Figure 1 (tube, helix red, strand yellow):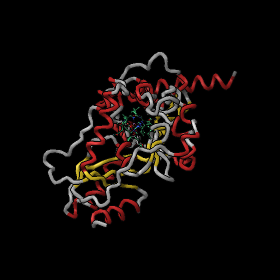
Figure 2 (cartoon, rainbow, N blue to C red):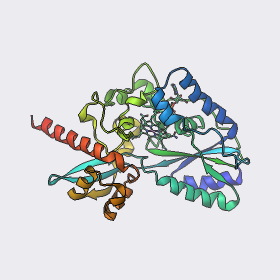
Figure 3 (cartoon, protein in one colour):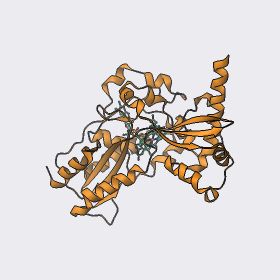
Figure 4 (tube, rainbow, N blue to C red):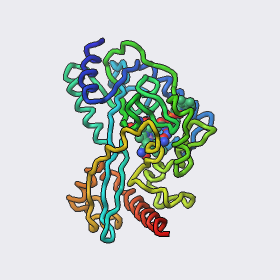
Length: 314
Ligand code: B12
């Protein structure tokens, strides 16, 4: 094993992280798969332009020594935030992998493991699930999320161009977990029915995560108002998945917002006028940069809770 790979193996795997190293020439296949889907009309055009046209299938021009793609998978729990509201509290989940600050931890570790030993790495904007699956880190679930063997799907993915040599090429065909051919729990529970039996790809433009990550002022009229359970994203298809059973109880409490703070968020206090303590709490749940979507999402969450209470009474 190459020295750099051995060091990565020690440093990353001792933390429960997983990684793969793929030769750079596989970039063409990553790009080709997305292009083919796009050209065949398999992707909603607005979704493609907004989310997928940003991939960059080449290392930067100032990195001609790049030889491989390093993919890293880091386990992450969901976090819970509490929002004071009308004398009570609203619980809101921020699903695993929204905590983008872990990217800084990954880069810090790579600096220690690689850069300090004369290697270079540069963050790569690539289709990460495809890379993870095709480089052998995991397999697709029926819900289109990538699962690591024995570790479920609550893993944030990241990729880097590096100059470390690739030993054995790990490339393999795209694979779905065997269990998914006998299970349709995710499709049955998806609140927007974006997982459909006749097609492997989810209808991303209908996914609740797509809707509540967007900047649109309102949710579409067709969306069931009872769907909202998370502050952003959605847990439905992953929560019900038998492969995640052992990882559901790891949710961590991250922040408690007073009613005054909740009302400040809902009334769209401009980000630069947010009190420091409130900004700190939003940072603690990694949503300070996405603050603009929170008033709409919180309002929807509060309304959904109200409805479920009414439902319990009747
Ligand atoms: C755009 C995007 C979204 C969009 C679209 C999601 C989607 N399924 O494409 C929206 C906003 C809806 C979204 C939602 C979520 N996302 Co998102 N998202 C992304 C992003 C930026 C790109 C994903 C992408 O390439 N989509 C395009 C499709 C075409 O890619 P694909 O699904 O891999 O498609 C391949 C397969 O379908 C395969 N294929 C086609 N037919 C068949 C048939 C079979 C049998 C098989 C096996 C394969 C196969 O071919 C395709 C091309 O290779 C990535 C970050 C990144 N840079 O990659 C994060 C990312 C995929 N998201 C992530 C997460 C966690 C989520 C959510 C779970 C968040 C949440 N809790 O709400 C949800 C999950 C929704 C879902 N069920 O997929 C994680 C996934 C981590 C993981 N372990 O898999 C990523 C990698 C972010 C990260 N840094 O970790 N996301």
